[in-house]
Image (cartoon, rainbow, N blue to C red):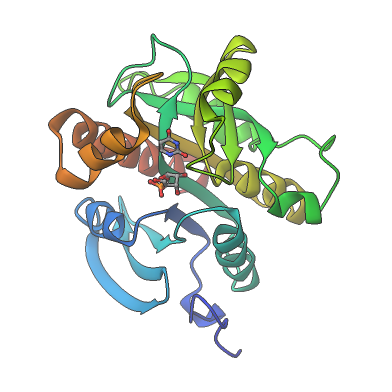
Length: 242
Ligand SMILES: O=P(O)(O)O[C@H]1O[C@H](CO)[C@@H](O)[C@H]1O
Ligand SMILES: O=c1cc[nH]c(=O)[nH]1
């Protein structure tokens, strides 16, 4: 099989479980948890590597920022035979009791992105795989919030505060840019998906400050990233699938 044009991987890898992250640097953070870690390739925003966790082979791929590059990466992963994808991402809080470095398991997504509208009307739900969601709920050693996310396309909207207030009043817990695309593709293509997000911005705090904390290695958000990676690996290697 030819290599996929963007991720530059092919089906000879024979790996069915993947973690996707936005930031290519986060691939290294995931590799710290894996045995026999090996970098594969880095094309555009798609940095890939694999390793094993408790004997299971895990692929790790970055997808960059936003639904367009995420859907390209996810489609190409499906084409090479990946059947389970967990996103380990960052988000901004949409509720004041969602603190920095706390983890959100996304139970459904408000589809405020443009990409998935090209696939299916907005009335189609963006929901995770129920088995992966249930597996997340039984990982009692890692505390999580479970709630609705909002995936958007515009980080620096002039009316962001109003938009966020609206969705906050509708009990949305956190915002990112790719979970909706992952869930829509998961349902349309018949693969298992889940999104786990580390909160890097307190509700109504400055977006850029929060994201800077992640980049500069603020302790709380780095601990949150580690927890989200551990949770994803626990779910991918849950007993039923070993
Ligand atoms: O940290 P990642 O996984 O990239 O996720 C979040 O961070 C980026 C914005 O800073 C967007 O991609 C958003 O979804
Ligand atoms: O507030 C935030 C923080 C990270 N990513 C987002 O999409 N929004």
